[in-house]
Length: 298
Ligand code: BEZ
Ligand code: FE
Figure (cartoon, rainbow, N blue to C red):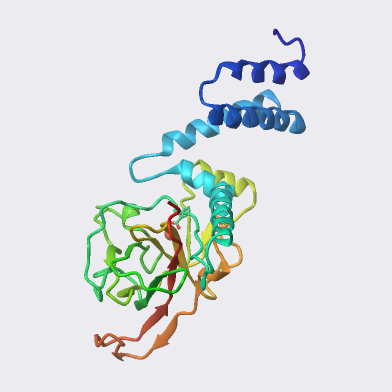
């Protein structure tokens, strides 16, 4: 079919999908083409606006390096990443509802963001994962259980955090790994480690996504949070954060990642001996959180 007007054009493009080999890919492309054409028509996109869009996406790609992922940032700031996370979690919840009598709901997921760096050091329970990192010391503790409340021994917390000024190691000169670690639970499913109390920080704004946010009149800030991937063999892994209660921007996260179940009260303590016996000569904080993993369907 040779389309002779814009109404026939969408149909003509969709018809070319008829030989697609993978049905799921065909379904995704069919919907993408349909929505894209509808969007262009709805806003009556002008040729210069279309060219601006092409230049914008080109700049997003050109801004990416091995340490900077502008496409993730674009997806995150448009709420696309969180939409994928929420749909995935909704599927998991309906699976769990069909399954056994869970005592506890699995920990909610949130965006991964662009600063995950595989290969963090394996550190023992009680380690300070942020040795030499700027920020207020914080004692993190809790348990990892299954949804029946049974402790998971040897469950893995793969943790990453910005420093007390909101900078990740990847963003700093030299880019040595810092404030990252892999920690495993003990026989009672317990974990504890030291890090810093994370502060609110802006996502990178010196690239095309920053210009887009400015154009939309949006601030670029995220509330204070610490990232972790929690996993154990036979359980569904979860990529999540703990958010600092009352942190600035807790109600307006630039990437829409806050979930009430992930907000934690950080308790302040004067200098002295902490719960794990560590002697602190400065005031410190503590944050307690229990993670819960759902059994992997067989
Ligand atoms: C982060 O929390 O590390 C992050 C998430 C999304 C975009 C930028 C940063
Ligand atoms: Fe972060």
